Image (cartoon, rainbow, N blue to C red; front, top):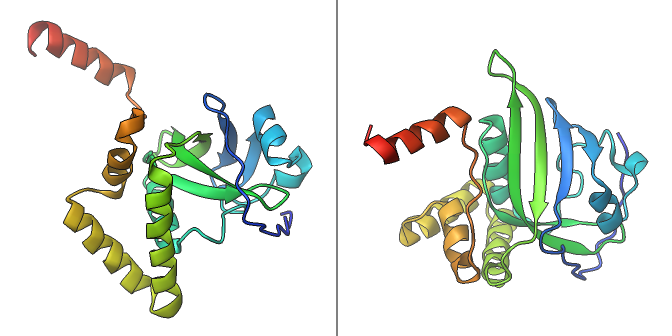
Length: 197
């Protein structure tokens, strides 16, 4: 596996709206493919990235509490739309909206995962950035467990899951939930609309 040796410089670069960074990972979450926009945007070449683990470019400003939510959804093979940040090769960072698609084997084990990074709502970013800094501070000076309890209490007060809270913050910019539906479910939904069954 490659060692990326990134040096953060606290400068932001933005994804272009409508342009997705696409990467594909194996069942053990090692990178197998990146699209051309990933190379162009991040400065990484294929040989820099292939074989690296899923979290190889996570940003130091991302609390482990939030990353654990993503990790659990990957273990459960469930999509989740959250706004987080990563680094690019020159040390700058970017915010993005997560979107996962999973290929599942017949025995329900993970075959592979495609990860889409999309341009996020700018309205949500300062609010989430403030929350993430609080969680990092709690993780650093108290513990992970206490940070998780803080987030749990924060979301209970909002009466929302973290995914719902992200959607709520983004509504003014027309946040659209990214859904994965099987053809069978879509068909059943149409039948229900037409015939009430």
